[in-house]
Structures are given as C-alpha cells and as structure tokens.
Image (tube, rainbow, N blue to C red; front, side, top):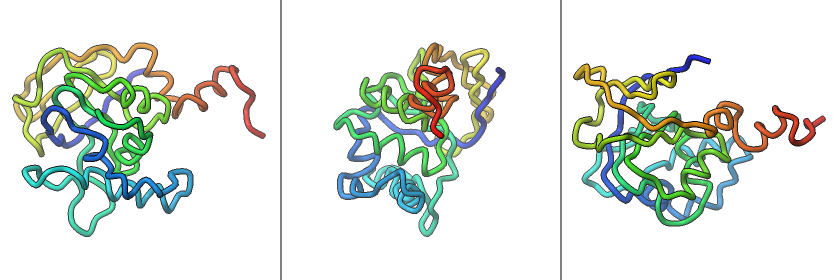
Length: 182
C-alpha cells in the first residue's frame, strides 16, 4: 500500500534521551485516558536544552512538525513507553535517525505511535528545522522538499505492518494471533 508522510522537519543532534523527550515528572499521566494522552503530548520534548527551538509552540498542545530528523542513538536512556507515545500524542508521525536505542525503536513498534526510520547517511547536517520533507514508504527515501535532495532510508521491513495496524496488540488481533475484543 502506497504511503507518504509530508510535513515540517524538526532537527536534533545525537544522544537525545527519553528524559529530553518526556521528563520523568510527566510519567504519572496515563496514556490510555484520552485527556491524559493529550496532556502527555503537550509536554513532548520539553526536556530539550535551550539551544533547540521549541518543539511545541507556547500555548499550543500539538507540534507543527511531522518528522524529526536526528543523529545517533535517538531515544537512549530509560525504557519508558511514554517517549514515543508523547511524540505521537503531540502529532509527530515519524523519526528519521542515524541510529536508535533499541528499546525506543521497539516501543515505537509496540505502541504503533511513530515510524522509526533509520537513515543510511547522517542527515542532521543536511536538514534544517522548519524545512519541508516527504518520506516515501514505497521507495524508502526522505526528500528534502526545500532543497530538492533525496536521501535513502533503511526499509522498515516487518515493523511497518505492525505500526500500520496501530501497534503490537492491534496487529495481533488483525492477523488472528489473538482474539478480537468484543
């Protein structure tokens, strides 16, 4: 099935950890409660150092960015599932990183919140926050619409249908691995 993600890019460096994505003080929010899910999203990336632009504008609860472009070891730190959930709740669709902490990558898949693309080359040096980009799922590329340059991405492989379904349990129900809820 053909799919693309289009939107503004938010660029980050290496070693963005889960405390920067969603600080521990917000982990009391329960993502299965709709109002707390929304609140969790409003705190996404609030732990970033001041050298970065704001991920969510003052007074807003959603981000204007669809894609994060990051360096190495994105999502390092704790194993909290709240990290990809907060980003998804904020309105983010995908992260394109040079590499991931494996637990963050797995949590993206399990929760179905974000597509965790891995870049073939370092992209934080060729994208700028606010530029427009398109991720083409069929061709495994990200296109910087501002510069017109195209960059290869690693295939999502077996992760894609799980995220497309909305996470691990939704995928298991969809494929008959576990019974559908009544």
